[in-house]
Amino acid sequence: MRAILVVNPQATSTTAGGRDVLAHALASQVKLDVVETDYRGHAMAVARSAARDGIDLVVAHGGDGTVNEVVNGLLADADGDPAKVGDVPMLGVVPGGSANVFARALGIAHDPVEATHQLLNAIENDRSRKVGLGIADGHWFTFNAGMGWDADVVGRVAKRRGKQTTAGLYLRAAVASHLRPPLGRPPLTVRIPGEEPTEVLTAFVSNTDPWSYLGDRPVHLNPGSSFDTGLGLFALSGLGLPTVFKHVRQALLTKSDQHGRRLLRHDDLPMIRIDAAEPVNFQVDGDLVGQRKRVEFFSVPEALTVIV
Image (cartoon, rainbow, N blue to C red):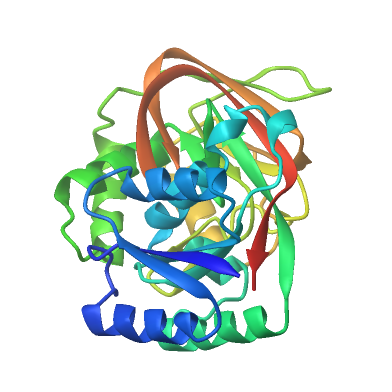
């Protein structure tokens, strides 16, 4: 088996020693090349080349941003068209970030050493699974995407964080973005198959559950979402403090389905279209993509094979 290990040295919990241990362990089972990323988009370029060169496995060692880049590189030649997804290298993940949402949702250990052991055992026993992904405006996402408040938070955090990203930083960004939204709060119109259009103020799209983590605490918006189902939608038509407090509390304290007068919630959707009255922030997998007035989100079943 030919494999490439893609390491993001700037990720929260990656170290030179950990990289060397991981590389040595992998090299005992596969023919391995190691690449350390040194610029934004580097992981995507490496994964795209790996797919074109017929590499069998690409292992991402970093946070969710590194994983997202690798996934987008592996599927780059599909040109955003789910129908063009063909045979691509398998994906392996050894967490090295702060949240590691995709890895945790797959049952991969948060500790890099334990995750390495899991990966080696999976390779030795030829153990893998297919996962569905989401795609929005040409960007593949593994666990979540959104327009509005959550994307505002992502953008604010990106301007302030160094290597360390803390739950407190996200909480402060969430409060600041709620009180002073950088692009205002233009209405969003949500369109889903078989339903009348609905106006909301912010929209969260899930590809799995939890939607994210706040420190060690999972955030559950669509508990029915998984890599084997369609997309989950969680959208709020009001952002008053009572509404926000109610749903944030439920998201952090329970895994049960949320309900509310201001809540629009669906599971297992094949597609979602969101139109904004004015440009709003748009994020995928915790990375701010930019501003958009319209985004279509699609579920792509069994898009990728993950060693797990």
